[in-house]
Length: 109
Image 1 (cartoon, rainbow, N blue to C red):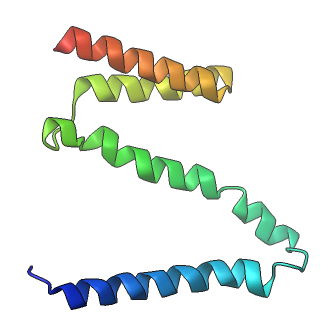
Image 2 (spheres, rainbow, N blue to C red):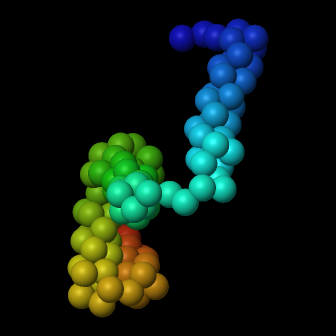
C-alpha cells in the first residue's frame, strides 16, 4: 500500500486528536471529581492486561528469529512467569527471565 505524505500526516493528526480526546475524558472532564469505586476496581487491572499484550508477540513471534517461535525466548518467558508466581517480586522475575534468556541463547546458539 503506497500512501502519500498528505495521507500519512492526516492519519497522524487524527490519531493525535483521538489520543487527546481519550486522555481529556479522564483528566479534563472528571479530573477533579472522585472516581466511583467500581471504576477504580476495573482500572487496577489495566497494567495487568496491557503488559501481556505487549510481551506476548515478542515471545511468540520474535523479530530476531524471523517470526518463528524460539525455544530460548519461550524458556525465558516461562522462567519469568514462574519466578513471578513463586516470589511475587518484579525485580527477581525480570532478572530470572533475563538470565534465562542469556543462558538459553548461549546454549542454543
